[in-house]
Length: 105
Image (cartoon, rainbow, N blue to C red; front, side, top):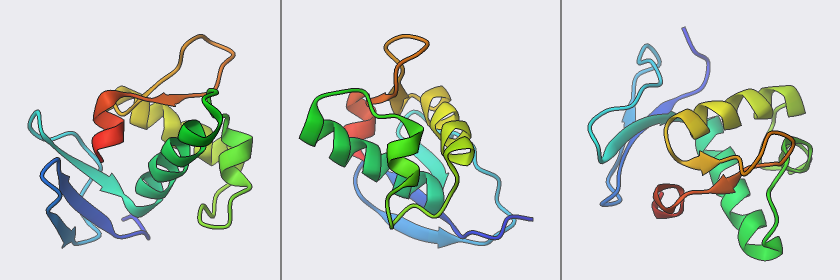
């Protein structure tokens, strides 16, 4: 059982809170279920990338007040967001950048 609420997001912008027993998983092509922490990390990556135009590392995200997680946890969540097609890692030692789909969230 997860201790953070999950939300259902569509690219159309609809948001609905789900119960804690839902797993984080991809839905149809235009829907995803993300945890609140994943949404905060995605939002932070997009904001920092727009500001710096440089790939964003987990340490810089973990230092933000709105993301309450260690850099290792942020790295794991960023890897999951990459699997969902929301982030991209340009090369192995780089941080992540948002994909077109990541910007739409």
